[in-house]
Amino acid sequence: MAVIIEYITGNYIELLAMALGLVSIVLQIKQNLWLWPVNIVMVSLYIIVYIDARLYADMSLQVYYLIMSVYGWFYWLYGRKNRKDQKQVPVTRTRKKVWPFLILATIALFVIISYILVNYTDSDVPYLDAFTTSLSFVATWMLARKLIENWIIWIVVDAVSVGLYIFKGLFPTTVLFLVLTILAFKGYHEWKKELNTNI
Image (cartoon, rainbow, N blue to C red; front, side, top):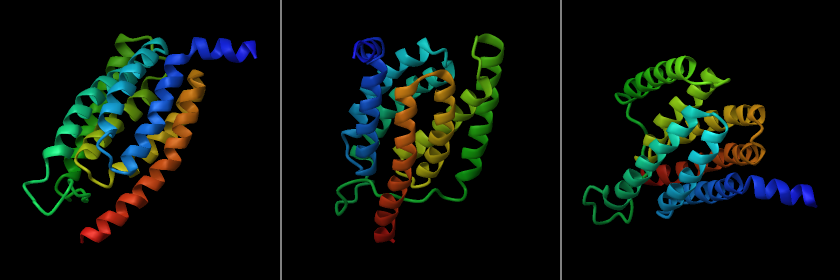
C-alpha cells in the first residue's frame, strides 16, 4: 500500500492529466463544447510531465494544443457559417485539395522537429517523438475543423505512442493512450453516423 501511495504522490500530475485525457476523449466523441476547456487544463499539466520526461517535441505540442483548444472552442461556437438551422458545426470530410497541404505540413514538421531534437536536445527518441508530434499537429487542426479523418490519424498516433510511453516509463500515460486508441475507433464510427445523416 505504501508503494502505491508513494507512486501516486510522485506522479499525481501525470495521473490527473491522464484522467482529464479520458474525459476529453469522451467529450470529443460526443462533440461536447466542454472538450476545449478540459483540454486546456489537461495540456497544461502534460507540459510539466513531458518536460520532466525529456519529451520536448511532445511538450511543444502541448503548447500548440493550448492554442488550438482556444481556436477549436471559438470555431465550434461561431463557425456555423450563419446556418440558423444548425445547432453546431457539422462533421465533414477533408476535401481532396486540402490533403496535399496536410501531407506537406506533416513532412515539413517531421523534418524540422527531428532536426531540432537530434541537434539541440538530449532526447533519446527523437524520430519517434517527431513522428507522433508532426501527425498530432495536423490531426488537432482537423479536429478543430470537425474533419472526420482526424480520428484515423489519432488512431495511428495513439497506437505508436503506446510503445513510446512504455519505453519512457510513463505507465499512466501508456494506459491512457491504450484507451485512446480504442476510443478513437469509436469516435470515428460515431462521427461517421452524423456525417451520413448530413449527406
